[in-house]
Image (cartoon, rainbow, N blue to C red):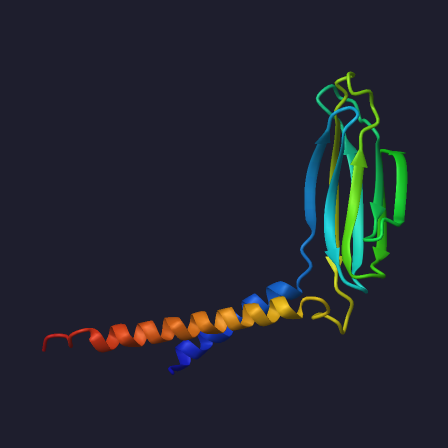
Length: 169
């Protein structure tokens, strides 16, 4: 295999591998009508550190409506609870592996047309020394898939080169 092909294969592997190690923050704007509730979930493993920032922003009538915000672990234990908040920052470390749920509720009267508009910004960080914790099967499958794709591309390229007629002289 040529040096160029080995370099391309190595770069492809590193991009896929490193993308799994980077904590990408999730930022989302949520609109809740009066009396409505919604949830967002996070799949965590033991030791994951989560940082959450919630900010209520002005709605179309230039009013900032407070919301109730709480987080439950996989056993429905409350990790944090903020009633009637306009914004908060909170962090925690997962003590169990599983799905954690963030709850948001607009307590305004359902008929008041008061929309709560909020921005949720959260990131999940893996603890040092346990990058593969809980993600090992996904990483293995991804490495195998990328390796197979590189091998397939190499074989297809070689066959195409061998089946091409030589250039005229």
